[in-house]
Image 1 (spheres, one colour):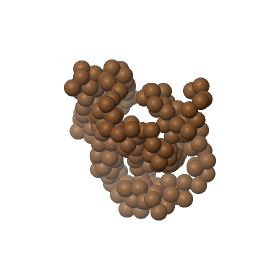
Image 2: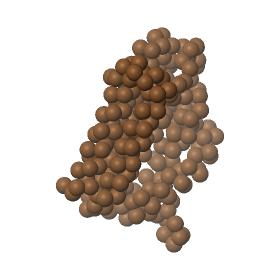
Image 3: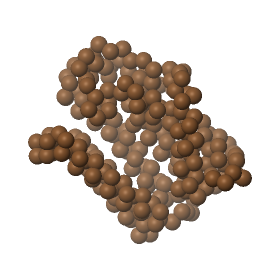
Image 4: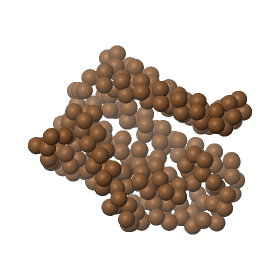
Length: 230
């Protein structure tokens, strides 16, 4: 294994582990020691530093070899379609999301889920997980498998831990809310995203362009527009 991949793996384990520890296991002790504002500052600094290390290690890691070629129209169409869904979930998660940091859970037990929360109560987490899975599908390199695999674990396990934490913090508020909205995405209800399907177009184009720039291989819509000076 190359030095870049080793650094990437270590940084990823540290990032995921620190997130779980500070968000759950050591959260109360950290808040008692730093105060709520100080805790958020320390948490953010640790996350940003480790993300930067991961970013650098990712670029120091070899780009290949890939397990299969991404030069496949069917694969690119699947990436584009599923990736669009992931971006739509993320955009929708920015509005009315009781799972966001600092969200007020008071009265949540009386709220009826609508929109994206008819699909899943963790749209942001699953948007990350879905995006990472399809990125490995379209760019199956060792560095993508390591980085994306860790982020999938962070998203899915983190969502479960968030349920437990919010239930402990708010009691029946989160528990009753969770009983009305599914954990795993219910794909039969994707129509509930409504206007978000249109709003997601621009961030989806930006996200696929960034992936193209980072991986040095056109993906999604950019795969079908190879002559553009992107």
